[in-house]
Length: 618
Ligand code: F6R
Image (tube, rainbow, N blue to C red):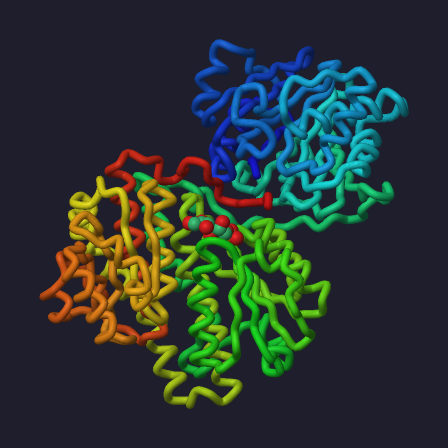
């Protein structure tokens, strides 16, 4: 799970590659490297650390001349993050160079074979094995680079997106993909080409892009064309689809905010409007979702919905469990992609599997999708990134249209996923006759109010910041919620731990007395979601239990609440809404609380340690 980007054309490659790597740092940032071809030599520089560390190193390291090159920002899989294991990697002859995103599972066997043929390895990476395998095949078969890459990839088990360059053939780059994404931007009149793990590195240069499919390899020729072949049988892919990118530059910049995470928290009102625009039509009292409309019989006959996802998307799946069972009366199971794929699940043709993924690239979720498909289930995707691997793999789906999410901690992805899932549950609930027409209208009218209510909540930012200042040094936090807000408690805890490195746990409020209550003392802040809708009195009793053990209560309560106000140390009021939509509001203060605590602890909010935005390895 790394970011790769390359350029071949008439401009200076260095600034394009560095800027591209900065945009891809969300994919990994423990080391970075670049290779440039200056017309004579390969100039390579790499380092442990971020792209900014690479820039600093390059100054005294290499010439940055040249119109061809590529770079890599890494999230380590094989070998610790250090200078040697960073990409790019050279072949033994130093003529070939590669960057790679993915994992070569049979690298050890291949390495032993290469060692027996006299190859020496400098790094612990699977990637150095691959470039030497390509070199060995090229030497033995006396073939062109493209052919050697193809033959080598046919020996490889695993996942990859690679970019390869041969100093002896300096007018072309070879690109190949299996399992890890890669996009290629086409400059005007084919005078230049851009290659990257996603399209963000080249959006200001071109809107025309080709996404390689799994099992494809492209030969990108300077001044000429991109030719795509199937890796397994050499077949030319005729008329590859050129997609028009809809991304804009502003969408991927910080727009005056200190961090992407904060920008994305503040984008939620508009992101939710973008999610329901054209779908939620209150005047006609309908919800239009072509992915459902085109497959309505499958949905109406579904005996069960299985939701597969990871991390925050899994939390959105838990909210959906409440939505589907409550509103559409369809039984739901929510599974981690990583568990589902390995536990021989029972899947039938009457099951609908819904895969939720912001990036659309999460390896475990993707594998769960493939497994469900192979066993006959109808698979529906809820993704944000258009054209992503999961979006392409599913039978049908709905995009969240949240816009690019760059902060590693998911925020607007979560609320827009819940919005799509709520629309889906409401649509099915209505079709199945579980919601009356007037009640359906009430839901639609209320969903339309949510963005305004989030805006009101965002005005409480300063108040939340003050609470953050009080608790920024504590070692532990607890988050409690019930019903629809139990998944919000899990999400609040995840947000805090991933960006501030404070240990935090989420629990269903009533589970406290079965163990975690032993943790309560006067140094334990407990965030309790206690909105008026949904088990209010019971949660108030749970709050009393914590208070009597001297825990510090931060209550997330409905506007005008006086009961919790009387007990809690702090309260954050959220506007009233229907119980089913409370997660869309209660989540917001928890995102802000984590954000401010992390900033006050001087943590790197947008790029927390050990994490990456898209987890494309299992
Ligand atoms: C947490 C977070 C992760 C992701 C998880 C799934 O803030 O971002 O837990 O939610 O890695 O990613 P997607 O949704 O891209 O499949």
